[in-house]
Length: 108
Image 1 (tube, rainbow, N blue to C red):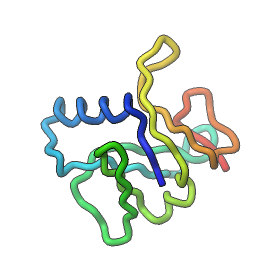
Image 2: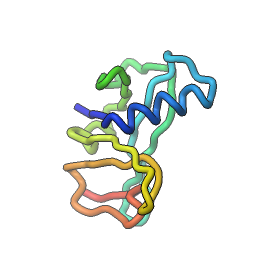
Image 3: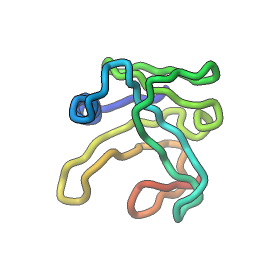
């Protein structure tokens, strides 16, 4: 399962409204090659649910994950920080053995 914190939920709802997206636009989380640690997170809105997608729902937010990315993301929590040490979405991933300083890439 992939979950979201209250702060992440609130920010997703806010961003969806700011960008003029409907509630049909879900959050797609995926993993791609790249970054200083080898793998990078990708996050965005998507209204298309592909047949091979895994769909999780937490706190009213639907999260779409492709089959390949699921192996790297199981158990991950999506958080949002707006503090002095950085602003943005953060991935709390129990599968990551190493993350870079910016938190946008990781390795397993």
